Image 1 (cartoon, rainbow, N blue to C red):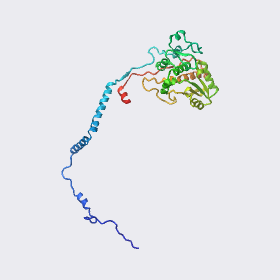
Image 2: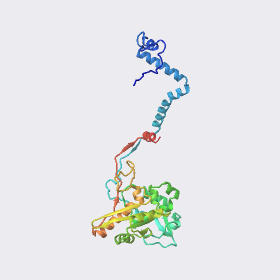
Image 3: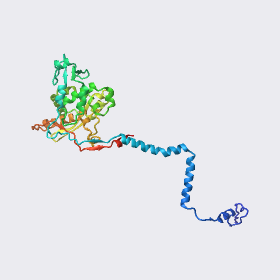
Image 4: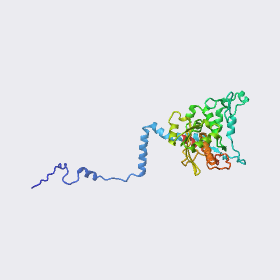
Amino acid sequence: MSYSNRSNSPPPPEGNSGNAVPSHIAMIQSLKTTGDDVSSFTHFVTTMKKNVLIKMRGPVSTAVETFLPLLFVIGLLFIWLAVSDGKTDRTNFIKAGNPTDVADFSGIVSTSTCIRSPHTPPTGLRACTSVEEASGGLQCYTQPPVSGLCTVGPGMQLVGSWLDFERPRYVPGLDEMIMMHWIANSTVSGDLEDSSYQQAISALANVGFVHFAPDTPAVRALAAHLNSTSALFRYAHGNFYPDEAAAVAAATGSDLANLNWAVVDVRQLDAQGVDVVLRMNRSGIPDTTLLRTNGDGLGVFGARNYFAAGFFTLQDAITRYHQRHVLNLTTAMPRTVYTPMGFQSYETSGFLVVIGSL
């Protein structure tokens, strides 16, 4: 068997034969650089001339690129001159020399509310005096379940002073809490309540019921105790549910969801301990099983939402019930006091605040 080896390559170009270097390549290889190498300074000058020519072709964009940073710096200078730094003095919320000076808002709420004639005050509430009714300074409401309820003066003023009080104060009792719910719900507009969702004012205006789970004799005994020791809790007493899921579903699964204050889920309430989950509505408070820093910085009253939501109130009432009626402690239990944490003086940079906002 024989083989043939025929090449299909084209013939070499003219002037090139076999393995010789092509003529055009040879000509390039024969070129040599003449003279000295160009210096770095020459390169720099040439590049600058080129950039100047390019910039001159677009004078408007060149002017903007040149002067915009300068205008920005001048603007920052004016902001810095216009905004002054603020200084917050050292604050101690406990009065020096008088650590027992604690505000009792329960008395203030009692004297600031009354039932006008001809309505009969229920237990725990007082009738408006003839002087108060004749003064024209009563603001009366129709929303609360108690007829003829009025405040001596603007109700919103009482709500504001109650929410914004930043000194040692007693944790509100059930009657004080429920009354403040009624007043806030009657004076805070629906638009303000919705726009302030998860804020203190919205939590306080969220009047509603307290539901209990599970439906056991121990839980019913707790609810009965709260009802017997509070003149107004009967208006907030909700239903009993077989478990937590059923209570949450009933509280959130209808158009009446905003008429619920809280769900009390009792997981343990015996001599070995107490474990109760409080599910608050519209409170804006975090899950308390998570470790976190409360507040948004020095001087911020971070506990406001805990007061407004009634979390402190329910927590304190259940704890006291457990100590007195489950553990059968006979020692006198003083009222629980909340005191905002003090802080050292500090300065705030107004300039950084404005620039950060921008």
